[in-house]
Image (tube, rainbow, N blue to C red):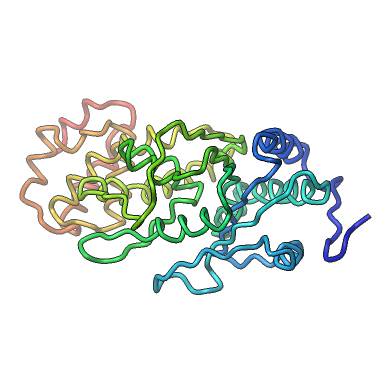
Amino acid sequence: MLKCGQTAIDLTKLSANALTISEQLITLSQSYQQRCLAILDPFLNPINEPFMEYYKNHHRLHQVLIMHPSVLAINRPWVIELDLHDKYEQSVLSYMIDQALKQLRPESIIAGNGQQYCAWLFTNNDTQYIVNAISTLVLQTRAQKKILLRYYDPAVFLQLFSLLNIKQQNKLLSQIDIWAMLSREGILNIHRNEGEFEPVLTGQLGINHEQYQKIDCIGINNQIINSQKLKQPTLYIDEIQSLRTIMPCLQRLMEKNIYDQDLQLEWAQFALRWGPDFDIKPRIIEQIQHLLLGQEYYPVVNKLQFLSQHNCETLEEVN
């Protein structure tokens, strides 16, 4: 029987995969008094689920305060504290997983919905502490300007994490023991925090210039991955390996103050085709070393587009 404020959730309409994954999370919660924190992100599209009113009434719906001009109040993330002793709240968890799986489908990617159900966290710390930590960490300083680091986005989290040093990783996770999220293939990815506790304090991760250049490559990498997934939805892509492949050539563009996104996208695709250092092969560097503007690269891009995708030696034929 539903309690006051609860709304019916028909488990028979949820996928078997969603139910299986929710059982995995329920099992993880047993070491945390069956408590789980879910991060919901309405950054791209609003979330107006009936169950949110229930958590609001029970003071377990927390909005992450982000003071940045690109994030309107209605677009701020939510953290919901789930009590997985309760069968209804287990159903809410299953519903969240089902929605998250649907948002991985090609039609959702085309619609630009993003992943609204970002992560499921396990910690023995106070919920408000975790909410405040996210609120603090999401704003970083770059060249004396506040930038938005939406690290809780599942399309960002693991890639970003791979670019941080151990101390930065520890601070990012703070007192979160387990960060669980869905992979692009719809598999539960369980990331355990095995580092030492680093207090959040000011929230600054101390990201340096080179790291920021690498972080800038994540958006390009995601564009390429989404494009590939639209063509082959079941294709497995190692997003971190893909990122590592495209970063060197993109960084070399950035060092020349070239931030033309269309060019970066083309350049990154060439790196995936021919390797991370395709752009410093003698015949290529000969043609681009004196170029200072993105638009000046396009004649070279046009030549490269006609080369064989399977023969790296053809790079030596560019003239």
